[in-house]
Length: 267
Image (cartoon, rainbow, N blue to C red; front, top):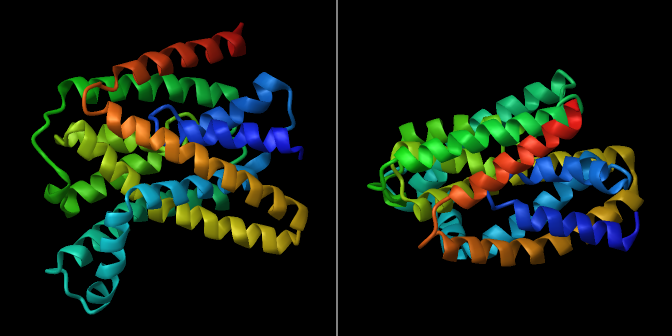
């Protein structure tokens, strides 16, 4: 794959991963709109791994807390705040891991990679985000996160396996519906991305090793590096904007994009 194609792929992923507009949906649409060859799921996951590095760097204080919580968690000490955070992230990740494994076993991953699915998911989940953002209270912050909320947000995150739904979008939707503020909901959504993307990265490594396709591995590494840089910039801008701006602009974009996709698909 050419360097220009990898750069374009990484920029699209980096900019859209943390915005509630569905990076996966945009990656699927990229070959449809440009005429370029479909990059496939391996490169899709590779650029997601690149964005993982960005979120870990941006939220490095929280990541350090997670690492410090591993030891007490293994000892069963959930009274430790860091261990409790690590435990809640694990519980929030279980639904998407189960759903992802089911889709893979049923061979439905590629079936869902279609413009029709992306179009409807972009539109419908955008409207749900608007509802949650307009009706949700802003009384909770990250320290209020509990097991009940973690599981509920985990179930929301599992729906993001539908291309176009947006992982950050649905988890933020869940957070806003529960009453978390916009910035705190986004923070929790970003932290939830860490174990989820790690799981995808492990599957990616397994696929690359199984295929022994080192050319794809090289392309994946380059794309991941570019995605890291783009994602770090996009994440920084979004977290600053959320202090003064609602999610309505993203919803408007999703509605317009969803209607455009469905218009081209059906007509």
